[in-house]
Image (cartoon, rainbow, N blue to C red; front, side, top):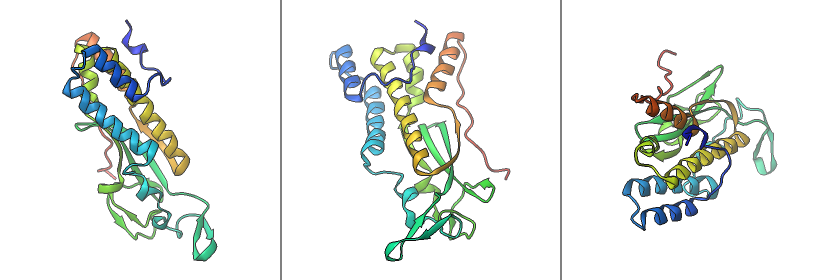
Length: 216
């Protein structure tokens, strides 16, 4: 089997079907690690599809958009109708916590990765990285992918495929709601392919470096 060809964009199974497959394969003795990753993926999916504890709320709250830096016009009842939305960059990253989607705002002609409150050049009135930066996370996904090559089964692969699809759907949806200047980083599928090659060659994997703005 060529593992690099198994991660596809098509979404074949939903999460509950994948969990049922895992129960069947393991005779209802589902490993704790699988359960933890599946639960994390379920929480991420619930946030994206159904708005549960939605991390996008602060980003999409137009009362937090700066009309002085964005194209806008007066609306009804003293409201403001925005013609444009704030600029952001999206980063797909693997950290020690797992796979994450990060959001970085722009100010003038560069990205900023620090807290800013009521800055006249900022397109958000308030930008707090602690609550607005990490939008999406699947805990320990990189470790789960690595374990797939040693002890994985069909259900594990389907879970990885589903994680890729959900994360890419999330980013696609975000691009419709904000002015996404760029999308950068490594997807779940791309890391899977890298891990497959490293595993076949017997080489160690080092996570890609997270973006660094310290020199700006």
